[in-house]
Image (cartoon, rainbow, N blue to C red; front, side, top):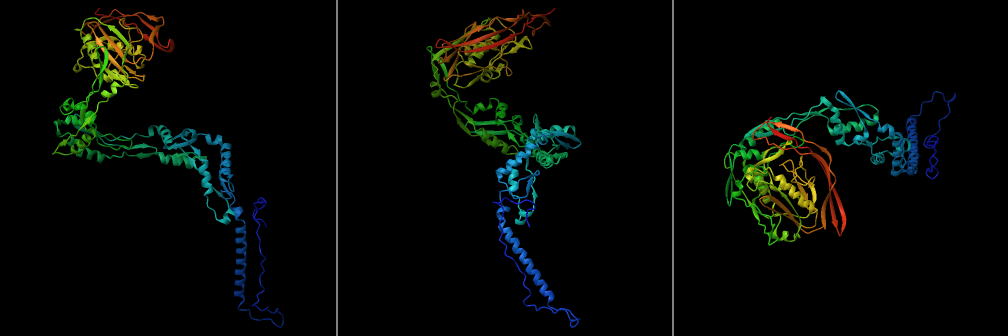
Amino acid sequence: MTLYGDKLPPADDRPTVQVTAVTWPATEAEPPRAAAGPDSAGSAPDPAAPRRGRRRRAVLAAGVATVLLAVGAGAGGYAYAGEVPRGTTVLGTELGGKSRADAARALRAELDRRAVTLAAPVPVRIGDRTTEIKPADVGLTVDVDATVEAAVGAQAAPLSRLFGSRTVEPVVTVDAVRLETTLETAVGPQGRKMTMPKITYSGTTPKKVHPKPALTVDAQNSAEALREGWLSGEPVTVPLVEKHPATTAEEVDRLVTELAAPAVAAPVTLTTEKGSVTIPANAIARSLSFPADKAGKLTPKLDVKKLRTALGDKLAAIEVEPRNAAMTLTGGKPTAVPSRPGQRLDDAALSRDLLAVLPKADGRTINGVLKPVDADLTTEEVTQLGIKEKVSSFTTYFTGGLSSPRSKNIVQIAKDVDGTVVKPGETFSLNGHTGERSYKQGYHDAPVILDGKLVPGVGGGTSQFTTTLFNAIYYAGLEDVEHKPHSYWFSRYPAVIESTIFYPDLDFKFRNNTPHGVMIDTSYTSGSVTVAIWGTKIYDSVKTEYSPRRNITRPKIIRLEPGPSCIATNGIDGFTQDAYRIFRKDGKVVKREKFTWTYQAEPRFVCGP
């Protein structure tokens, strides 16, 4: 008899079992019965016979058990050969008796044979809609290594390892995040987005929005349904579920009652060793918010930056702003203007303490902590930046003297930038440096280009300074980060290599891409503005070569309603041109940069018929 049917294990793997012959004793305690005959007919049955039968059966069972245990013990090497229990299959592929590595190779071969089927789109039902999902789009795949480990861990009793078989389901993985994104698109109009809870202020009045749940798919549930149903060949059903925001309508009401409303019911007094400042309700409303995270949980937040803006210059009574070191020219040589440390409120403590007192009706006073603040650029640092010589200089000219609003704006922005130091690797932003150019900062109304025509606007003329600064850094060989030439060309500017500016949408930025610091030095006369860049020279020269102008266009005539907002112009031709920045060092051209711009033809604006 063979334990393996028609198949025998390999000779070097087949167990050899030594079985001792078993004989059944002829009942030594049991005398033989006389044969039935004429002289013995009608003799009574032996009352000990049933007990003797039970004994024979017990001995037989013990013998069989002994044989099987011997077989099991001897066949152990075969039953446990390999790391995967014998008789184990995955996707119809026999992995039993193999090592992990061999099992993984066999399973990968089977997956390769099924590659077309496994890559086919999977039909998925979501509510009353059906869509198809490509496995590759959501990372749907069989994890071979994890499946082999599951096969190795398939428990089987010794006899089951010899005679039994077992099927192990493949371990399927899917990217739950990518799946959720794909399914959310497929949900379509039957789903609905979550209405997030919200608390805002209209002036100093709290306004609230109660949350509403979303009707959508759940990432983990959807992933589990797809993992279980993918290989079945049947459509996979993904349920629609409601997702509720973490903050309930009752919690929104509580936040309004306990914090949002009392927060703006009265001012808060901020006291320091240098005096006190009153924080009015409107400043609190502008800085207190209740942002919701992705789960819809509202968390009160006090934005100190917004609070500072709302307080305006009130904090100047108790704070001292640090002053960065700067450079100035003394006797034609750059010298350092010392830095100065400052004192500022501890913003973290201010936010914490103010939030703590806002729910209270009384005792609305907090103590502010003033901390020393160092300048961003100290005197010692500025003296080590290698600012020692003039690298470039550029001048543009204007008319009207220093009394015209446009000239005053040019002078004002030149003063704002004068002496600025840009450290190696830093990017300078003109809008960031000056901030919004308004009447408060000393700027005046003057013509600006808006929607293709000249109109009065605060800060008109600052584009001339921007162009002057752009050319100064251009010829210093510094990196152009952001600039935009004018829509129309003006003869007072070099074509292509010029720049406009408009707060906050249009900015001018450059980066100090040298290993040395640079200083911006500005000066002006009654008819010109000059910007010089000081630092350490990198190139022997930086020059410009122009291409011929092309695509010439002529201006058209546009008639406008006469009045103070109408500014007449003569019109200017439009054209396209290239400018090449040429860098020379040690007598050789080491770099070329191309700048191209197309100017529109400036219309001839006529005020009146």
